[in-house]
Length: 162
Image 1: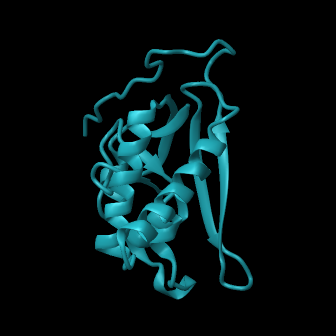
Image 2 (image 1 turned 180 degrees about the vertical axis):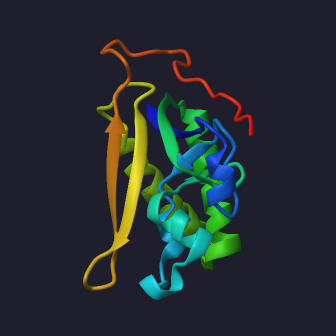
Image 3 (image 1 turned 90 degrees about the vertical axis):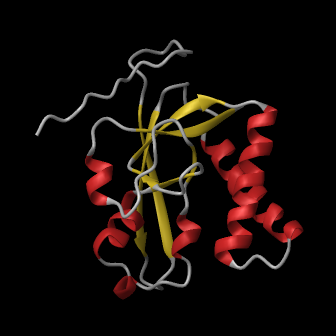
């Protein structure tokens, strides 16, 4: 299986998001975090998170980029458990069964998204409100440098020297 992990090319996420995700966290789209909001509600750093932030499942911070990574059954079970707990604690899920159902739906979406792309393919998200006020997501990919799946990191993070 393949799933998304956060990746950082520089320190910009620290500046544009209220809370930046750390590198190598499992990640989901996280669009559910904005349900109930309108375009008028989405300002400042919340706007940046809404517009193009994935949700890291370690810190529950945001990441501009994610990368396709290998994911085992134990990893997936942990992702679902963490996400279900988040739904209970922060999104009002009525019980563990409902939260786990929502977590599985969210993880299945990411699993489906990652079916075709190669390991290390980079994903970005663009989120907006449509004319009816519904949230729409558009995903873009940056293909790994060649067609051979990589099993080691091919991207590196360079420190910004201000």
